[in-house]
Length: 262
Image 1 (tube, rainbow, N blue to C red):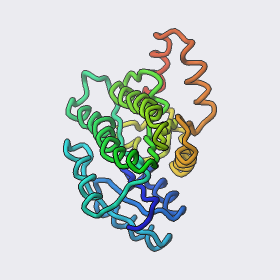
Image 2: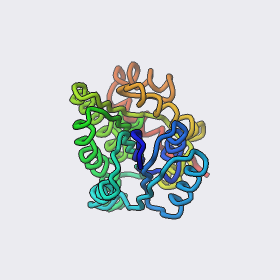
Image 3: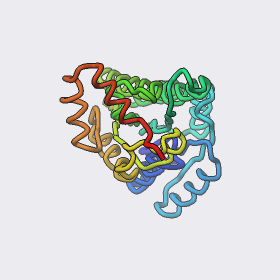
Image 4: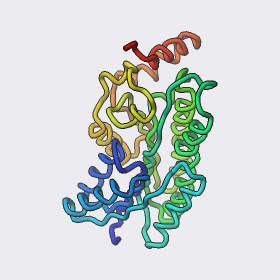
């Protein structure tokens, strides 16, 4: 790859990650696409290369494995690829009261949503700082601004992502590198099925993955700190939720995640 604008995107085989791959490719940038499904990634590679005349490297890896981030990094190093744009998009949730959930599923969630994201950021940030150039987009959630009964671990992982992203963004100001946290509301993706969230009402009016990807990519390009895809949600989490009694916030948060009967 010869592009000076190569992006690495995790969770690139579907949803927001897939749409972000299209947005970046349309700008003429090469890509490293990462996900578990080799078949979906190969199909995406062929589509992007044929449509946009760019180069795409496929890295099929299970990001819930402890060595996943290092394996991804080693592949880009082996291919002499400099990552100018890192998009940590991969993540998943899960529904239910914490004590009743499978602890291994929640540990895998923490691995993907927090640990692998952190490790990838660490590996690629070193090169960005050395080159005095780079952009990071971490896909978080409006869930990061409050605790989430019935999705306790997921909300907590996203709180980490939003906090971590803002902290490193401040550290990186001297190095011409930016970090942006994308905090969408409900998005129509495979996230609902994978997280056992069918029947949860907040997804009735979910936004499209394409619209969220466009908001996130634009915010990253502009070096914004935190980006929301809905102005109403931005107002809610910044100006309304902090003023409400904590127990009321928890009650409302739980109600939003309860499944409708039927």
